Length: 356
Ligand SMILES: *Cc1c(COP(=O)(O)O)cnc(C)c1O
Image (cartoon, rainbow, N blue to C red):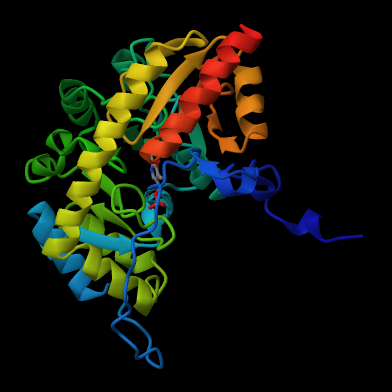
């Protein structure tokens, strides 16, 4: 006997997000969560944990604002970008009436957040070229309050055309917010939509310290938007979302030297990405390497299922993307250290001779 019949239908029916950690595996080469391959050492400076933290630690929001050229009132800091997604859904979507729209193959949390709030989802697949299907999106905007666009898109790595996003913003005017998820934008900073915020009150941008800043374990992300939208989200965010040690380290990561170190890591990672892409292209079992702009590559394999399983057995954990629309045969490989990239290539070369 249990009490699950008391639970909300939308929660009982929910398929929870399959995070890399939940999927498990045991290995020594972790390339399935787009994390930075090695830890960066930090020193805690604030020792006063007897007091509650500020809801929005000023040093963190001010430094993020300064870095992005925005006003601090346009910045919200949260437990990862994932909490930003959740706050947007709860603030803008009436359960049972409103909808979110997203474009698979893409990040899984948009639908998980909506479903756990009892909000319906509309999935409008990307075109074969990885871009938005604008006519299909625009014809289905009824009751849609949030349109999630991921650029660079996870898992394809592609940027979404700016012109299409501009068209979408126009179509959504006064009807729906366009939420641009820029979790990987530090790997292609010239493509950021932050400069658009001034002219586009219907644009919301999500950012995170989890990827280029090498701080996935910190759980710290940002929502950038018009002041009124940030104020609205602040009404529903928990009172103390950012623990004092988190604020402490986030402020250090966003100092001038922290940002410089991040840019240095990005430069090194892009070298590894180029090397990995070139070597993959020259590997027989690889059918196609998608041109990625982020810290991972989407790769189509001959016999992808066997490739995934064999890498898994060798302790090389990558992300299977075959269940996503249009991605049969595709695995996503995070860019690791040079040594990890080499491990991947030698394993795949071996597989090319064994199973092809
Ligand atoms: C990793 C990721 C996030 C989540 O970032 P957190 O700040 O760790 O919650 C959001 N969007 C996309 C596309 C991601 O890949």
